[in-house]
Image (cartoon, rainbow, N blue to C red; front, side):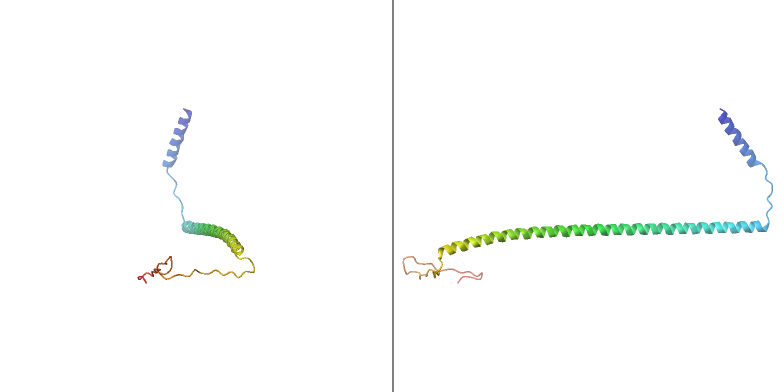
Length: 155
């Protein structure tokens, strides 16, 4: 209760002071000129501060944009390096697979050479002969004529 009464009394006192007549201000030309100059200087200072803050924020924005571009470039470079590494690993796997296949083929060639060497003892002059073809109608088993096609007909 006391608080409300105190607030009401303070409000009434403030209204009475605001309504009280004020003495006339004595203004000479120097004070008026000084006030105009100070107001202009304050306005100019405010504009200077606003422009400075604007440039600072632009600089921060440029720096942030540069950092974002560098980060994107770094990420792109890392992705490209990872892609090159995977491509190299894939090529290495292909080469290893080809080496295994070549080793298997070399083993097969060596085995076949050993078989041929066992059929042809050292010092012999063994030459494989081609069977002689007989003309059709002669001999016991006639050989039929061979048909060759080159895509444009038969001979």
